[in-house]
Image 1 (cartoon, chains in turn orange, brown):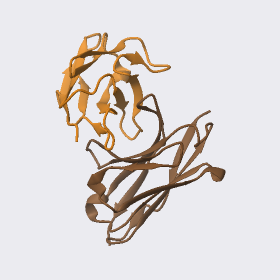
Image 2: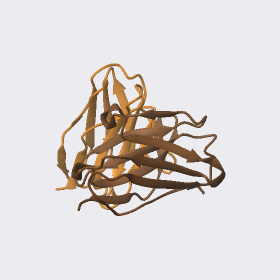
Image 3: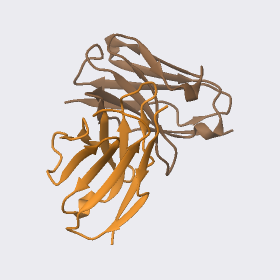
Image 4: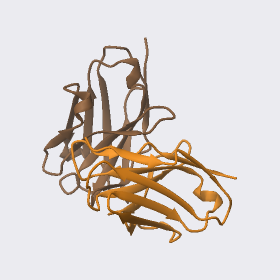
Length: 108
Length: 116
């Protein structure tokens, strides 16, 4: 199975700060990588698909990038409503698809 | 609009079978695949399996032969059945729609507790 190593596990940042979360794939997954935000008690919400494409309705301060087998989610100017847990998901090799371990983003 | 909604028992006894239903609206099961994802409390997400738009299925081998996914297109429903439940199967179960290798719409989730 493809492993997705997500870092950091937790992150504390200030409003308006730039935040970056990364996922390292254990092998090539092309652009079959998506990012999700989950708020307490809620379902995950799609942010980025195809490694770099912004999902409908997602603010433009969110962006995704890829360098080889490392994928990054960037929040350009952190807002209060961005607080939550973020997950990456690889869909290159199935079964199974595999999620990263998650990054808990908190306000400093 | 696109909606998915999971339903099923909140409490299941150990060794029994879990049966969940995902009822979808706003899209056709013959055009999109639907996936099942599990989340243990406070933990990450775990992909369980999927029902393809053509009726085929794929499963996470971590569930060996315990898991079965089926559908009724006339009722716009996808079913999950998992047998031999243990306490570690406690968690929230989601169904979600697949598009472009991502899960764009999710149900609200159904919490399942395995306990006697």
